Image (cartoon, rainbow, N blue to C red; front, side, top):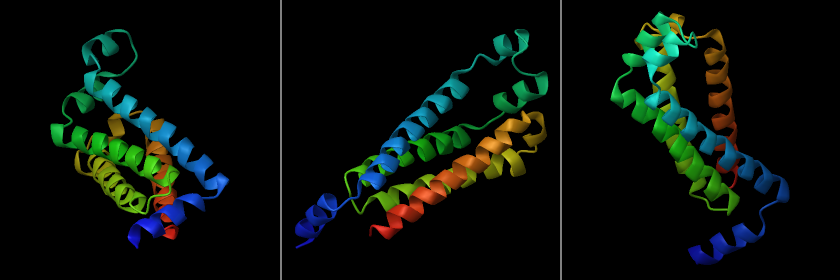
Length: 146
């Protein structure tokens, strides 16, 4: 019976929701790229080139592996959630919930617990708000499909 319900749900997915989910796939794939670029950034070269300040370099260099893992998990789980939402799976909600929790941990550490929030460019705080808002919105949409 569960398979029939899942199949029915997939057929009844509105086009606008598929479009949003498709954009979500691109959004979270870009998030994974951003995580990888930040994680592998040669901070010494970036500072020498004037792309980041010495304080920003120190903030990046002292980011613990667990926090980078939260960034990766937030993006990866969001990508899975968006793909699941695109195909109409009810499991999308769980993936988005993991993504949201991971993003909250990441940003709480960056802007609260680490004490390095002030060393980061101000536009990064705006990006954090947008990331959490998008993930909240997709989590809500996925919850409506359960």
